[in-house]
Length: 433
Image 1 (tube, rainbow, N blue to C red):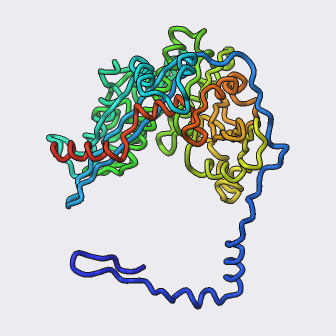
Image 2 (image 1 turned 90 degrees about the horizontal axis):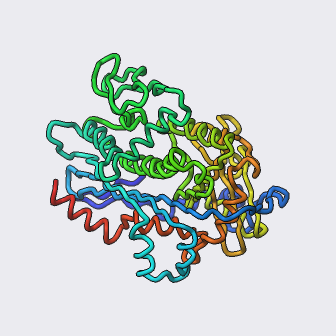
Image 3 (image 1 turned 135 degrees about the vertical axis):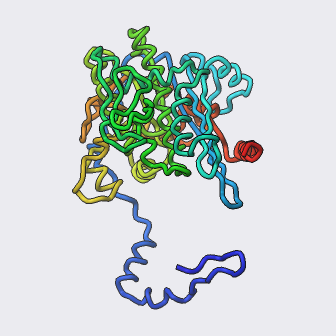
């Protein structure tokens, strides 16, 4: 590796002739020739694509959740950093959505549609070298996460949803939290009694917060935190907003829950130590299904390995079909990893991957829950697909590739775009640090 440029001296330049000896190798020449060929990638056999089964009435109520974040870092040492996070839940009935031109929506029509149909959440976290009186950055972020989830403007609803999921309150059996690592003494037996928001560690007797069970503190130092803390918080809060809608129907109008479609921007997955919520979510969805209530949830991936793979196999796929890849297909063709290891998504995903080609112009990577984990799910394992696929054609947008209009609108509400929002946030941060 060459030396980087410093404040006094220029950087080292790499040799422009160093590759000549390498390309003399016959094997390297074969690699280069193969690289230049434009063969199409291998596609799944036609038998693995199944016709879309769209049956039943389209779902009349649509909810969409999205989030965005900006980490603002000062250019000069000590490179102070602060993170802004925003999430939004958008609700609209499908007939009202149908009245909007999905190709060129009128700004006033969007204004009227969004005025009473969205709730949003915004918060800020000190990431690095920010002085918080009486607190380290570690404790400031811990308490900031708890207070943000408990936000009064949303009447603490996301925190109630976290309790509903973590304690599995739909089950009517009072359960304590599974043990987690104490953020103070690192003991592995920290827990909270049923329905508690705070408590104390049985070992060191320091205060525990319900949000500590998620494990944010496991990747923070005392005076600095990685940017991933903000991105994971955004993803967790999106999930809590989504299930806040599910919880309200379950507790108040359970008979209407099966008439709702819940859309999430991004995969239905929670990774690493934060995946503690995955098992309760799966158990709830399975319990609801066994009770005869299909909870229609769809996540859409707009980038990443699965999206890139669809761009390879989509052109040869038949329109009006879906392909549900199993563990071995994902491992071999998308992850490109050996057979060793746990089945894909076993501990982290509450939705199965689904490649969908709705028509010749619209294709997408969707995530649809199965309830219990399935390493090789089939179309019949997916919860509520007949009504989901009856509804999706009415939600298509032609403004972006594979876009769903409700997710597009939710993104408009939640967006903290690079420009001009980041510029404004940077000015705000500099004025208050």
